[in-house]
Length: 448
Image (tube, rainbow, N blue to C red; front, side, top):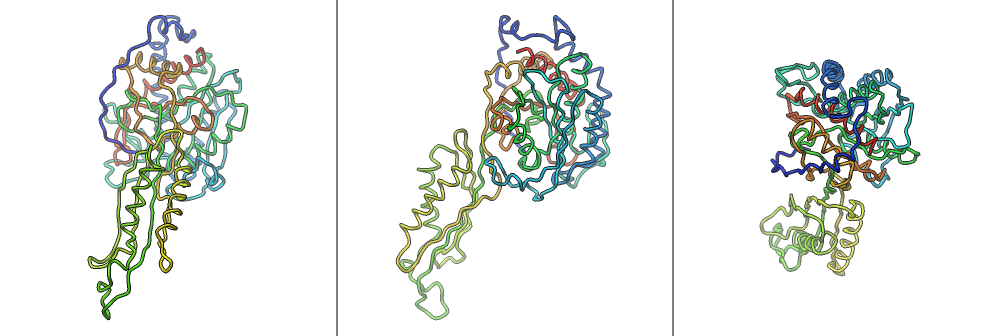
């Protein structure tokens, strides 16, 4: 989601020398400064990184499309590394009864191609990287061909450069470096992530949940939508429920021929009044501990008559333990009681509540968890800037490993711009640093 808020930088105090000593280094890279070595390796793979990203950009994989051709590029790259490749054709409809399911936008049932690379040599404790292969649609206003990468200065322009093919490329190149240096390989996943995750992230993580996966933590190689790159880490996502309530009432009998407005107001049942009354009951009861925004009110059609119908559209923001399904079901119970108590023997109100947009559950990883500290230390050492937590995102796919696998997950990515807009770009130097952070973090996690 787009979010242009500029958050103040929070001071991040590096761990003490004692704590730092507890974080093992990448022995093959160095015994003194692993982050510098990781960055050196990443810089040596700069051309390969650009080549992979450019190849991905040239293959269209817009959200709602299968992405088969783009995933073939990923599969071809991974086949040169010691991975067992699992390819799946997923249909969102198979998961529509899942408690984490959100209807994809745009609609469509695929199938959608997802790729998971499992290390052939698995360790007792595994870690995972994932990114999404699908991109935003092509909007008007591009000054270059969105499917033909173009480098201007230190920026690489093209559809999906920052959201999120840059993440896919960084993840793949990091796996190459880890393989070359003899380190344990992470599980690598190139998934469909846009439109709610039902095309890829949900099906894949649900399947993994049912296996003996031994995954202890996950990095989502995707930048915070703030545009700050590695300065921001997504360690939590808010729950969101976009709901619409439609209510009908009635008007009294007209006292004059052909004059609707001649009816007595007291004889009518105002849907608008009752709806707003019901909404306040929501706020005081089932929505008491969640944030509520009444965004749209559409009611009535005449200034002189009772508003006998109304539709309100509102958004809920919530944290655990709330879920969108529980909030929806509890609201319906309140609606049923309200309608019964306010209808008369001759006239009845009607009300229907439905979802109209985002329906996602919250998820959060502990900022002070050892895995979080390793990510933060890697970023601080490689970029010379301490990262901060960005907690305001919603519908982020880190919720899937957090909720389905029960493991910490963090979202990080490189500096980029024009998310969801023409002339999308990624900063090449920062993308190289991202590769180094991935290499360093995977090594740190493995030795934690």
